[in-house]
Image (cartoon, rainbow, N blue to C red; front, side, top):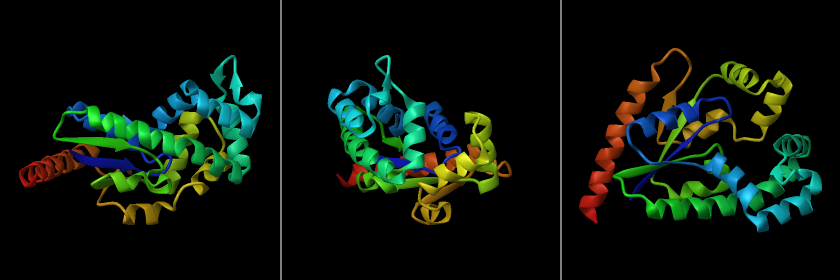
Length: 201
């Protein structure tokens, strides 16, 4: 099966792009929400997180996301340790999900495709790009946090320019370019690539 990835920096709008692929009938794996689900449901991961962050990491048996966010963005080393716990489990979960799908191609949406190493399991990478000022405004409006908080989160991801250079195709989501036509072009390209792969098999 042909596997594509969607990635982009915080506030780039990669979820909007992923949802457009869903509307086209393409199965989409959301790595970020799956990671949160595993942190909530997997007892081994829960124990590792509590050992790292303390019992405050869970409140009333629910993942205390605000506490974790404040902890990891204040101490980058803890973010790296958290990623070492969560990324392998999410990659494994995604690969199990891939195996259950039956479609010409599937999509994995993840903010940290390159950072986590999961890019190696994919055949084609789509980047979603937007100017920093617009990304900051989107995240401030969405999460009700300060400009400084947004910039801290942006620093924990690969530089946007570098990330986009690593992608096979970049969608501009800058309020100047229409996104739907860009998605439709890539959708057709991926259908063609999937067809070629099936022919070669």
